Amino acid sequence: MGIDFAPSDRSRLGIEWEIACVDRRSGELAPAAPGLLAALGPVDGFPHVTNELLTNTVEIVSAPHHRVRDAVADLTRLVERVSTIAEPRGVDLLSAGTHPFSQWFQQQVTPEKPRYATLIDRTRWWGRQMMIWGVHVHVAVEDRRKVLPIIDGLLTYLPHFQALSASSPFWAGENTGYASNRALMFQQLPTAGLPPQFTEWSQYEAMVDDLTHTGVIEELNELRWDIRPAPKWGTIEIRTFDGISSAWEIAALAALSQCLVEYFSRELDAGREVPRLQPWFIRENKWRTARYGMDAIIIQNAAGDERLVTKDLEELLPTLEPIAGALGCTVQLESLLDIVDRGASYQRQLRVAADNGGSLKAVVSSLVRELREECG
Image (cartoon, rainbow, N blue to C red; front, top):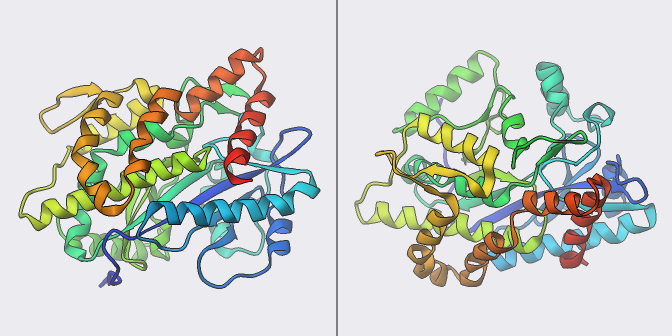
């Protein structure tokens, strides 16, 4: 099976933001997405708002842009439009990796969508458990030969992506003890989780051929890896992030994504190798940051050196500063340190619960407020 990789403008990016609908009075998830989308009306092209697996979710999708701030501006404009329609319906919007207390078995799967019906039919209990939300960042790569080595490089920074975006400490009313419960839940699906590490594009094509032949997948987008090639768009898609609670945090993490892809692309242009971690180290890093978030001690390199994830981030940023300047995202990249200072969303949620006698409804209110303050 030959898989073409579409031509694309180097380092151009697009962002997908999954947002949950909640009832204003109870804070419970609400099956409001079909009504909101009907009121918005059909839209061709980008940016747009679309449905997702569950009727409690809308997905906000930017147009492709060269600058992070322009992609994020698409998102905030569309969230404001959705909020305007949701307001008189008693619906609020929030973004997190999981809802603090709603129950998965009370949620409705979006009807008349064959790929969702197929997913649920195949995965059953685990598929119905997918009451989770994320943010996906696409970054364009101009040469297919670069895609796999850049993904290897990005996997060494998967723990940074996960720790900074972690926003799912609660599940069905319980404190899980994890910063990102979503990360470990999502990988239970048979085609989700960490990607295989290939050295040749032909290996990727052979794997897709095997999975298609045996009926594991019918389309490429059914490979729901944490970081994956997106051949249709000519991009690498970073899907590691939990649902991100505010637009400024999305901008910061999109800037990190764009800068790292460009950094590794330049390394390849210069004839240098992109750093690669052993699969068992990548798997361990994912677990550590899902569990400990910003307090995770991560494995930095193939030699097994270790460091606190936030300290490693502080050392990385000066390396990326010239690239951020060239891409026009210096301010957004520097905002990563604001996440460190203020706490990631999971830390903020835990503080709100502690300050309100354990009230998870107060956590929902705080998440609604964070999104509303930036998106009207």
